[in-house]
Image 1 (tube, rainbow, N blue to C red):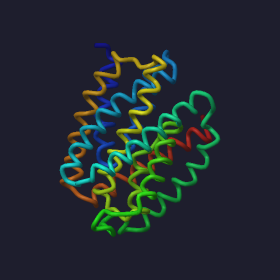
Image 2 (tube, rainbow, N blue to C red):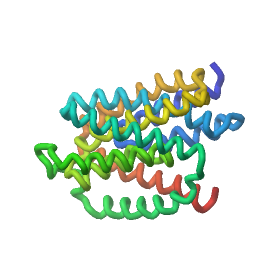
Image 3 (cartoon, rainbow, N blue to C red):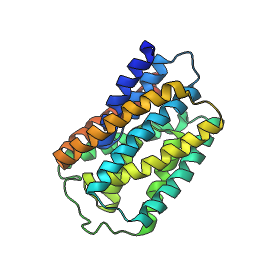
Length: 253
């Protein structure tokens, strides 16, 4: 195994760990992949990294679903919408540039960071004990975030968490469980598109997937053990990281 793959596997572990706690593992994994694989196309790198992202999210979702029970009909609705939206978003990415959207997302993230930092009780306790809500609200979240993940990508897991807390009244733990399920299907939508185009580098993607999954298992267990306060702190760090990443893309890249 080459030194490049070993480094990518180490990075995949930490990405899976962070992603399991609050999302945003792509902020670690994607830049590293682009730097360490300079001779490969962007499509090959991004497509390959979707495999470890999926594996880490899968095992994190399994862990969260033991703690937070989500009705099967809700899972089916959310994942179906998110999968289709992500597939369409990834297809759009292959034919048009997403650069025009990044300044908009940057402004939105600044507002999110300020709001979360100043509102100390944000996501600390549920305002929706029954976890029931109008189905169309969940559908809109999955549609928007699914397309975003396929078309733009950075911080999707964190944005899903934010949407479930602010619009559906969940706490961080409940929002994280729902976000993981939705993120699974958005990753799958992109994976199928990239696989059909034949751009996935399986000899790199599979070892990274194992490491990302291990990070996802450990991170999700730590999140459940430490609770909402710990998740909120990591959430703020990841949002700030997303801001830096998008800021670099908008102003410097």
